[in-house]
Amino acid sequence: MSFLNNSHPALTLLIACSVKGTVLLVAAWIITLFLRNRSAALRHRVWAAVILSALALPVFTFLLPTWHSAALGGAAAALWSPVTSAAPRSGSGSLPAMIVNASTASPFFGLFGRLADILLLVWLAGVFVFLLRFAVGLARLAWASRRAKPLPESQRLFFLSEISRSLSIARPIKVLQCAHPLAMPLTWGIFRPLVILPSNASEWPKSRLRMVLHHEFAHIARHDWCLQICAELARSIYWFHPLVGTAARRLRHESERACDDSVLNSGVEPFEYANLLLDLARTLENSARSWSAALCIALPTTLERRFTAMLNPSIKRTQVSRRTGLFTAFFALCLLLPLAALRLPAQKLSGTLAGTIQDPSGSGVKNATVILNSHKSNTIVMTASDENGNYSFKSLPAGEYEMKVVKRGFEPYRAQPVTLESGRDLSQNLTLEVAAVMEEVDVVPAGTSKPLPETAGKPSRMRLGGEIQATKLLNKVMPVYPDAARTAGTQGTVILHAVIRIDGKPLSLRVMNSQADPDLARSAVESVSQWRYRPTLLNGEPIEVDTTIMVNFSLAP
Image (cartoon, rainbow, N blue to C red; front, side, top):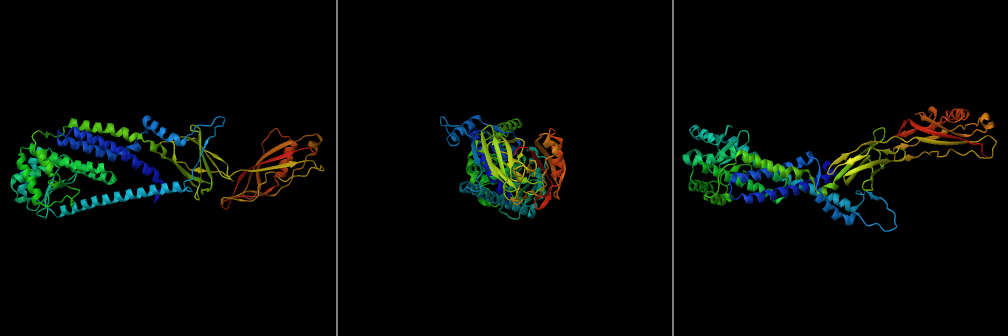
């Protein structure tokens, strides 16, 4: 499962969204307390705004630029300062901090990583259970709708157009009768909404049918089912958060009360409408559990509070105006955007830098040492690549780092400064070049007592990490000290550059120091051109490598 490799940032994001969502939910709860004597439609709009904001939090977190709170940052520094800093002793030097990434070897960090993976698996299991329950409810709604029959033509024409005009509904609405005579009336659907009534609804008195249809059509006019679907999705994602479940229930309750107010505003007497709801709850089956994805008119769990509200003449029953709705959305954005951009102190340590180190053939280089140096914090962080050449730094503080990669047999790699942002994951893939060969030869005149040494720094054949087989000099022809140079007392060093071909022969010999004596340079080129090497092998294949050869001509005995 690939998500386990990034479990720590994912868990940090989930915790951060939960904390920020708590702030939104508490704010909505306080606002609705102040609005308890206002209309249910306004309170419903507040709960809808906070649920949509909770769903949008993860998206806006990635889209918005990072904002750090100075107060939170100072509090985090005060909490961490006893652990990460210590007063230097007088008279002692200052050494940079050395942090070694030992997450694969330390039992503590290994346990922490496994705990993070377990928590994510538990969260995913909860999300799956809630989404499955929601999907089953939708499937049962679709199944019941396919088996339902349209309401008789006479009943449809008498009520539908009149109620639709009064509620400004332009969408076509289907009113169906299910096969069950005791089913609770319910509404569902977005683009083609459906109202499902019990099979004996056509036998109801016209006043009763009008009140039921007006209540269900009010749900459609207010887009309550779409908002309730968003609430169910939020409850699936934040299933562990009790306030999210409370917000979803409050949203459903306020939507029912707002539709009750719409029925009462149409001229229906409160006592008559209360008797209707009581009769529906008493005679029809409670389908709240079976039809969790639908909006039911008479849930027994909410009837008492709805009766109290509809029989209270002092409560306002107005619907939300367009201006009030826009102001609510604007106020919700003013809370959502700063919270989404804010990075909590824990998120500042969740930056991850990872990548792959490869050789010129594209194979991964194992056991390469990756070094990050932050001059700002005077900190060095190190890790090593695994069998496939992958490396990873977790929980890095945000900032700029200089990156260096070293591995025997390869040239040291220095990358451009890497800038790691808070809460972001950065990928950096590198390719190492094979190290050049270095040979050094001392040349003295013939007949001197000084022995001719072997080549200084001569590489022996060795395997480096199972990837590089180093070059080995097989045949070396020693340069001859030119007579003219020896007579003139000329001595010095000739630096040659060449490319060792895949057949082991030097190619493109070139004198690097132009100030070298021509006689010495000619003698060095003539001898080195006859050298033969065992070529460098990269993953078993011969490759060309650069070589630098220093020929020292000395007259000293």
